[in-house]
Amino acid sequence: MLALLSELRAFWLSRRREVNEKFARTLPLGDYVVDRWEKARELGFGEGTSIYDSSIVFGSVRVGEHTWIGPFTILDGSGGGLEIGSHCSISAGVQIYTHDTVERSLSGGKAPIITAPTRIGSNCYIGPNTVIAKGVTIGDGSVIGANSLVLKDIPAGSKAFGTPCHVIGVSQ
Image 1: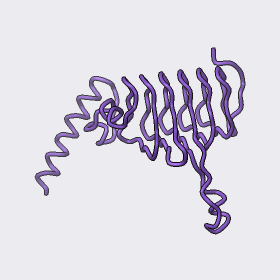
Image 2: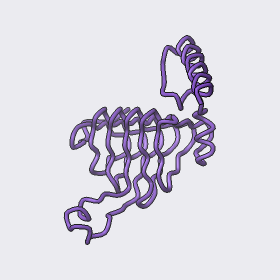
Image 3: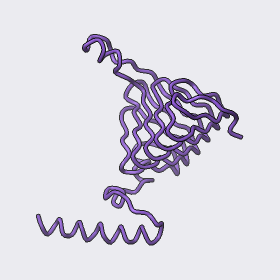
Image 4: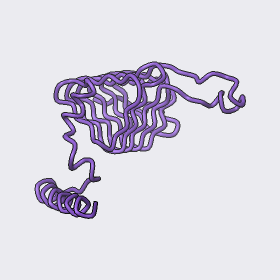
């Protein structure tokens, strides 16, 4: 067991140095081992899409082509399906949901879990640490600022941010 642990540490140190020299970054262990594009292919995501190993994917999640899904994201399609278009950037720490358990919790487990599909169009940028609630649609070509809480639909071509998120202008 100690020999295996020693080999794993040596591998990690070697990969960490290699990646840091080439890209000036360090990553969690799993991201040195897992190929982001291969993980996306195995999940059935579109051509050229990548997703970090540190990302969590639940339920029915469809992602288009050439979309970047950053580290430490949660893509929860367990409550009606999640769809993300092509050519999007889903930044680090983003959480996207298709259900909530508020009513169930408040009712002592008597009320059902509330579900609704969630959709992000193509050519969208979702800023770091944004949370997108169940049932929300973000239209094509939209920009959502960092740390936003998106509770309502955002029209195509919008620039929006805040908690709660609100449209402040056009993205183009």
